[in-house]
Length: 217
Image (tube, rainbow, N blue to C red; front, side):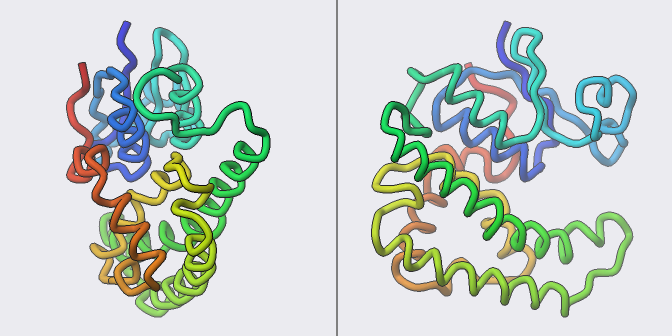
């Protein structure tokens, strides 16, 4: 049974998972969830994802939700598919990966996701965006990216000199910042600029950036 990904086509978290699926070339089938119709709140969906959020996967009967947990699972189950995106064996490299993953969640996503939500998602819900809140979040994110500049001046990627999924985790919301009206990702120092240009040019990301593809055989 091929792995099934349940998500909305443009879901940021769905595209995070799809990026890893395509980077590692793991076969999957897409099951489209229409958020506009409230399919993510339907009893059949909530039975598997109790928070009524996308995405979740069904891997031959094994149900898993939360995009970062799904991505880690994919690496653990399919270590021989595509590049290794989480270090193994070397406890220090593993620790540096976990540090980088924590940095993304606490120092990037916390601000980027909220900024995008303020300008892009609030109007979709019929709410009024607050430009001052958006500007404040972007200023905070800009301060955090100054620390990224230091980190990326020491090695090529956030966890060392090899690409990991901690880098990939930045792509959905980092790319949507421009849609929200901020060019913050293109106005950083040379190290962040190099890193961002490289990861945002990955074939796996560009395959899913416009929407999660129907699947991969």
